[in-house]
Length: 125
Image 1 (spheres, rainbow, N blue to C red):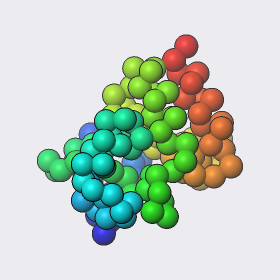
Image 2 (image 1 turned 180 degrees about the horizontal axis):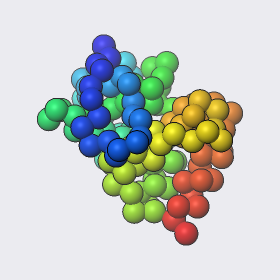
Image 3 (image 1 turned 120 degrees about the vertical axis):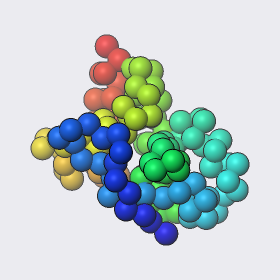
Image 4 (image 1 turned 90 degrees about the horizontal axis):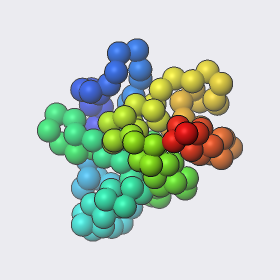
């Protein structure tokens, strides 16, 4: 089940995910225990942020019962560049007209995944 939840901490002028999953929803979608979902978050394989006091994950980052293939690499690159989870989420959903789909998060699920990883890596320099 996806929830539309306002992006409480979104920066002005940015967009964010339109649909969110709670951690139990992610566990069900990925056929994992809730503790495995928590482990994926700790290992930067998934990103979760608090919205209305509940940790949530953007639904489009958990597609077809799997985590987007290149998401863990991008999350680790962003963390290495000093981005916390909120900043990483803002970066993933920052509108970018040079990308198909208009945001790094959308492009990450398509042919531009390597370009998104390159851009995330460049943030560390």
